[in-house]
Length: 335
Image (tube, rainbow, N blue to C red; front, side):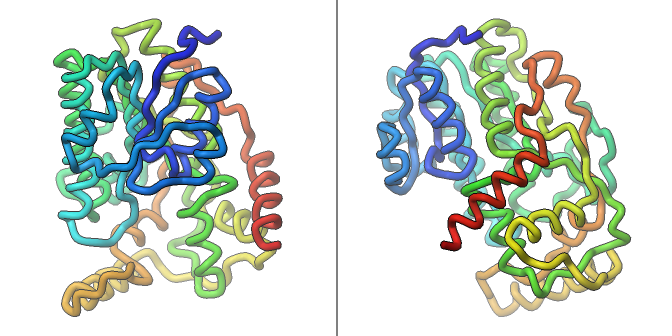
């Protein structure tokens, strides 16, 4: 049931992996969609999407882009686990503050903000964790730290009248992935299991993540009291992390991960790499970081009953079907 026929919608980062999936579903639903990104994307052009080039850190550009908009999906962010704090802060915190201010100025009816479960990750196992989990005392990387800061800004804005919902999708994957799966494939021969290999994780197929964003918009329209709420979203099907890594490799026609290192060895290696890379000012991501070591050795799966109840969320594409589609796409992109 679509309560939101023909809205004017802006997607920040509409040319990105999740952004484009959201754009496609909005277009299918008959919305007028604009993407705000730093680059121009031919794919979006072919979909008939209006594109505005600009930087999220530029308040004037963001304010102009939000004129006459009904709903904003703020998806754009600087991802990754390595890099200077300032770069992450500018994209993730300043960018989000500019979006919130522009929502106020332009009286935008709704904001759906894409966050990350890493904002509550303290380095320990998270098993069946729900939205009551607190932010950690300290963060192991600038990405989760700045995403947590941005999330707090959105919650604060919601309390002051900007109708907002926050979604935390975990490990998004699928066809056209330009981050997670390619990163695993690139390291194929060198990957080693970290820890005992039994840790379970949640993932989410890209179309399911996009679907949840549209559901959040519709739920907020129906029930404005949901404003300020945070929701974990996933496949609702936790899997052993290394089994999933092997499934991605298998989809690319590559052999499974061989060899193993203990969680403590990986963590120490991460610390050493970080020191060396910082000392020499090396920009590219180290082979291991302390944050990655913790992520790879711990369980992180979440209780998504709140999203089921409030948003009516359920994954439409199963993990198995998603892997079939991923394999098909990887085969096509190799040809």
